Image 1 (tube, rainbow, N blue to C red):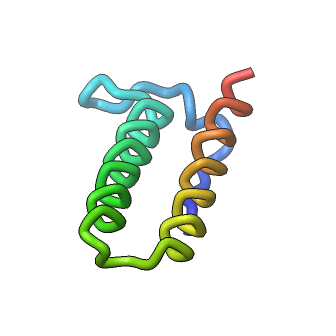
Image 2 (cartoon, rainbow, N blue to C red):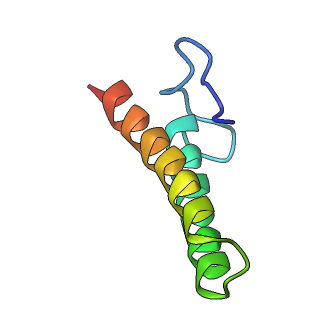
Length: 68
């Protein structure tokens, strides 16, 4: 399930210096890497990989759309 940002919070820096948007991009990147690892190891089916990849791609697209 995708995490939805609070209205107005996507551009506010966090105490560690990362914005919520940057943190979400890092999380999506890590999830993509883990998904690739699971698919390469045949831990998940191709159908499952495709469903999960689509969800990650949609999350990344939403981040890009929010930036405009």
